[in-house]
Length: 486
Image (cartoon, rainbow, N blue to C red; front, side, top):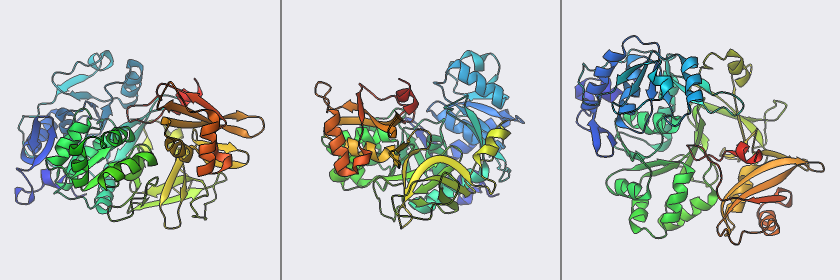
């Protein structure tokens, strides 16, 4: 297998040794310095079976993961906000030999008491690392947030990392000249694989803001960065700020690519950013187990509300509840997304039952995401099968399009839609609203009429709840189970 990071391991003649590779705040490393630091750390990792990484948004996390990959040792990124029970489960399940961490980090008892600690020195120097691992060797074990049980460890092989990043390079025309800015967590696929390993595979550079701010985005994009990655919460803040921040407008207008992911970006926010800057945010679709499946292409139409077309090397189909394939690509017929390709994980660690249940007999992965597909192949996600597919009055309705419609109402700041049992309809549509003006929230009848006029009468909400805020996880996704269970 060719190396994951040619700029780090190839001969100096073809590598950008003095070019910046990583920058976190005021700290930066060139490719030569990153290779030296990673080379030193690979020697300390030795023959470990797995290593945990205390994945703070720091230079040390990036160096630790790169070193583990070059050493051929699977890395298990840990969310520093995880509770002790969850950490205990992950550690007992993945059984790492070491924990890699920044020197000043205070580790919680499950790590402190049971694992050998290795502090990452980003200024250390060691022999240039070699990359001898094979395609199917595990690169990462990333734990998915469990909805009905403890998190499962998705084993992501090196070929999935390489194929996803190369497919995105094709779709986004991503090169070593690009400079990426983001503020994403480094314990998820989005920030770690796409946002950190992606630039390094291309020989480009990444600037991590540490903490997201629209001022930081403006500063970096106006200072030479070409790409921005974010989640909808970040783009929502950008959409609110562009009306009064000329520096931000200039920054976004000059960017080569604005990418949103990890959840659907409301059409309303797409529109506000496009109106202010003339630039469209493009969306892509993936998950821990599959890395990336689809994207709007840099040379394609940025169609708000869609996640584009399948990436090179990815097969995608929609299936009915009985397993038959949806053949009507009419933008209306809902089916579950199933995917197949080199981007897939190999297994859930220690869970052969869950692994077998996740795949069809002919190798398609059941994503649990529901979507429709336009005649030209564009995919529009309408929600999760478990929480976002509402069966009401004989119709299959996706929560996402109702949420987008609600967000177009001037009295709605945030919106989520769920279903609840109804004796007549099967399920009735429930809207959870954060009003723009808490003193004058929009009434149910007003919202129902608003939705019915934009979509169809059977998609109107029958119940509305007003909230101060919607429950969200670290990536900005709305936690609908928390809504449904009060």
